[in-house]
Image (tube, rainbow, N blue to C red; front, side, top):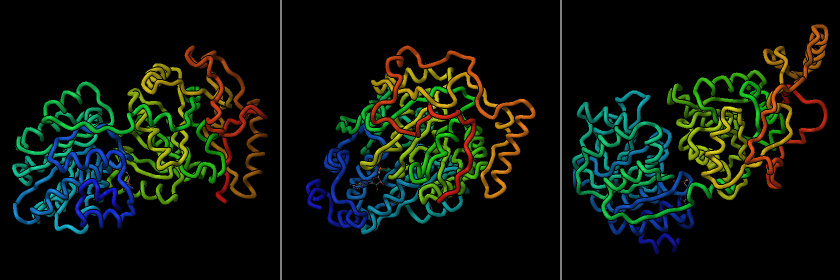
Length: 462
Ligand code: AMP
């Protein structure tokens, strides 16, 4: 633990870090902790997964240690965009401050406010909050920020994306000007830079893994596919052994889209759950814990809900729809390839999404290899009968059912396979010279052999 000692961290905290199994600081911790302990403001470029929570919370805990119980009121405020992140940060604070007498609480919307109000009344030293509920409780007179000495703005770029920036500014307006501010953002778009300039005083800059380098570590591929055929492609790719793809995080752009994907997969007896803003907090937490414990194989998420999901052994991310904000792509694929594990990111790209793909490639400064052969290339028609009712191989009668279905289709003169293509839509010029997956690209199975499959049959878990 001498690395931590060198950073100036107090023994009580080092003991807690050791109990967490931390043996040495991450790069962001190495840079930020001494600077913050020296009472500097911090401007940090780092995303979730880099250990930034400890980087900002350890100096706060340490500086407040001596104060415990002496002054009243909330002394540190950590603002973060999502409930999941807020909960994770509060849990981290609980563990880092395990040997210290400090009270902490977490405030977020979507659940009843009474337990949170009760916690505030009992006294809070370090509060982690999402902006909406915080403002709400401030307006009701339950929260007073006049004693704040430390303010953390976490995931500032995400606050902007999610439209929280005005709420954030309202909160900042209520903070004492004499305070230490620690500002973290994965990316630094102009508006975030402007905000940082307004609220930081002579900050020390710390930075790890610029957003575009993370992308380079993950093996990425693009599948050009019509929007309506994406579900067939998804089933096709997932119809591989559970060992090969044990857990997949699938991103959709909308909540409704996430529910549709889940419904479709569940019909095929795949274990899938959705996590998005329309779900109750309990449902979201349950979906997340089922996914982490591998009860659920597929978690389908919208960007907002997925923020802060931290799963070390996530091997695959699928962009069912690619995002229109290029940084979001990097955030998404940054969910995989953690902790030295290999990561795979597949992106389904419809004709309409090609401009978004171009923007992403510009940001990450690389062309994403295109999978040239798969059964659902643009223009492929999939027989509606299959579309409506997927087949199950659910034991003995499964085969009979498939045989019956094929026979019916034959009688109706329909084909069970994707029959024809009527479009020349293919990779844009930029990718033409890169139409093969790179050597390290994922190998979802040879897709050029045999008749194309319009759907996949359920394979029981073994
Ligand atoms: P964060 O970026 O703060 O969300 O942290 C990502 C993950 O890294 C969390 O699961 C932390 O518990 C873990 N972590 C943070 N710092 C360290 C460290 N120094 N050694 C090992 N794990 C760490």
